[in-house]
Amino acid sequence: MEPRPLSDADADAVLELLCACDLADLGEVDVETADVLEAWEGVDLARDGRFAPGVAYALRGGGPPELYVHPDHRGGGLESALLDFLEAGRRPVVLGVPERSAELGAVLASRGYAVRHSLVRMVIDLARRRPGAPWPEGFGPRPFRPGIDDAAVHAVIAPGMQEVDGRDRPLEAWREGLVGRSAFAPDASVVVDDPDGGVAAAAVCDLWDDGARGSVRQLAVRPARR
Image (cartoon, rainbow, N blue to C red; front, side, top):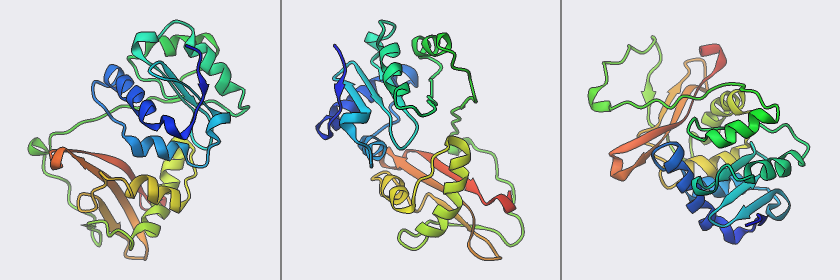
């Protein structure tokens, strides 16, 4: 099936494809509708998106390019075809490649792509964690206050995340795509006020499964306090 231009009506079907890829590559689902819509924000979907329902998906636009091929259809040429589409956008193509996605990794290597950095997923059972280190004098954690802390936390998080993925996300887009998510947990998130003013550090967290599991979505420390 040849990928066609993407449309707003494809959100649910794209999510289904991404979930299948997550299960194959990560062993668990790590995506929800809010992630799809966030990636689409401000993007001309018909021009910058391609989708073959249940088979393949690619997106080029404001953020890092995305390329997904269903596990049952990998290695048959779709990876190369979608890379041609992404590279036609005339922007540097930086793709995340899960370790289990050997087909995509092989195609990228054959086209001259090189590893820039590796990302390691780390997991902890909080019931078995070791006691934490003491906070530096004058600093301590408190919960995130939605609507009050947004701008100050964004001022710390945005530069830190830009160092990692190169994305410059304005406050409103960050607020809608992260703290506006249904899984966002203000009480589980952490804000550390700076005695000199503003916020010194913050961690934005989600909770899933009625609070039984969660994730640290973003964590950053103001450079002067690192």
